[in-house]
Image (cartoon, rainbow over all chains, first blue to last red; front, side, top):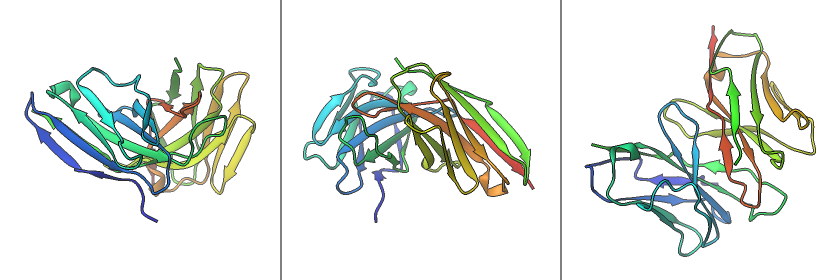
Length: 117
Length: 112
């Protein structure tokens, strides 16, 4: 079946612009995660959704970052007033699980490479 | 919070040799440990995972071992092939959300 998709794949923004990054998870996956991957580093957790509820946003670096998943499927990560340090690949992952002691595999999308000039 | 350390940062082996990558974690409550392979410009791909009630898991040329007491886990690749060349990330998950905390990555180069 179709995997996780993300759009756009590449985004160039001028410093100060707002951007919106989209994630389409695997159909039926309850959990959705956003990660930020800087060049040469491992992904870092940003935020987590269980259906439409944002249960953990502890990884969002500032109040310029905002995420939503209003209908429990597609999610959007919005960055306001972009800064150069926001340049990174933003990865979305989805999994079947909705918490508890059993973990299900997370499947990643191809990412959106954001470059802030 | 959870912290995951991974080493080595780079590893170069000859085709056919074995490769071992090691990770340690800090949160004793962590109970799920996946490994991802990421080729340049591509998405991380899950290659194997292990849960805390298991000490070892194998899938063809890949195996993962877990030592809960010492809080470390390792990836073993046998009979390496050039197509195994990539960056490998370990991760640990805990709590009710399953968010992953990743290691820093290991760049594996398999020379023909």
